[in-house]
Length: 83
Image: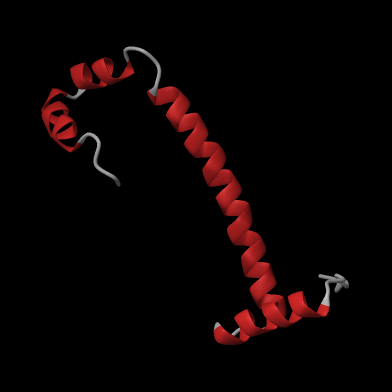
């Protein structure tokens, strides 16, 4: 992979360097990992939005309860609790 230059102000460069050093990484490795983590967060946010849209559909919870009656009571007992 070819190298390139990204221009940032010196304060930002120093902050990246400090974080990378604290993690025992080079700035290059830290920025590569940071990019992957941010890409994953974007994908997770999109997936979460779709999931919430799907579970909000009328009748979905009832259909699930009908298909999996043994799980219905346990799910109702934990409703509202943070995951």
